[in-house]
Length: 359
Ligand code: F6R
Image (cartoon, rainbow, N blue to C red; front, top):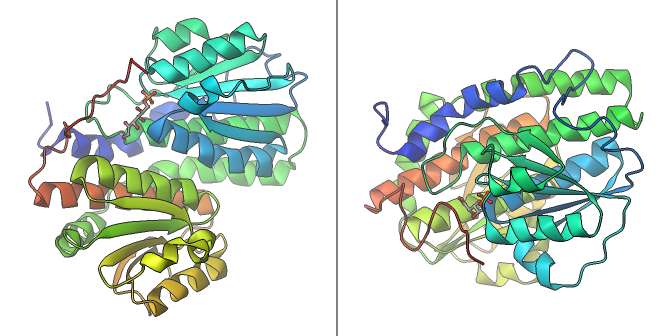
């Protein structure tokens, strides 16, 4: 039931605007965020958040670490579950342990959750599947309400996870009394605009389709961004790798000069995430350096950028997270169109399974 779409992934990209609305339903009030499903005392005595996840869910976690620290003023660190399990981590009881998983079945994430529970930590699972192994294990669950995700490459699960985590950061901020009323209202206002930012615009899809034919060869891709656009860069690179089998890496833009820029040449494509509302001048100078070394630049930005070889224009907004979601859609479409042009099976890429239940 692809409803006229070529692949489930395409359908799921187009569904994001609606499922994110479902995800916020009943949870957004004018001046507060409600999560009736979690214990009222969940954040009492919590001084730190530890997030564990894998793959795309890890990228949602990494994105939220910027939001938790910025909005809720709570220390937050994020780990890949398979690393966390064997590092003999130090766990303290003032830490809230959050796991993020579309399926609720990923073996490493489930095991990390059990370790935290055994250590006596409060835990929360952000999950898309009710009654999964993780939701049965955790003390508290927030469901992402994305609906069944069939494409192996995760799309709508990621956008709903990120929205839940953004809301959770605000929920924390309000409970800890570290956010002004005006700031909270403006964040809630921005959250309400997310469905609009996730709507696929014909002209953006068409642009991605046209650009895709320029990017079938070459020796690789850099996806670069700063702040929350760094995890978004990781996610863009992962999507492309998974379904196109092309080599792609996501980097924090400021790291380029510490090594990766040595790879720059015209056959190295840089996908630059250049939001207007966050560190624009910083990312611009990072991209200029890559351009000076002859990397082919594809800029994604609401602002014109004269050095770009290719350009995908996003809409003007007044919040960087709205730019984040717009750029997410662009990255998803671009990787899908490249994969289609290469003749790959977009929904069932080689070597991958939808749910990784062995470590
Ligand atoms: C990427 C993707 C994987 C999953 C990862 C975790 O598109 O789908 O990277 O995100 O295997 O899966 P969940 O979220 O089910 O724990």
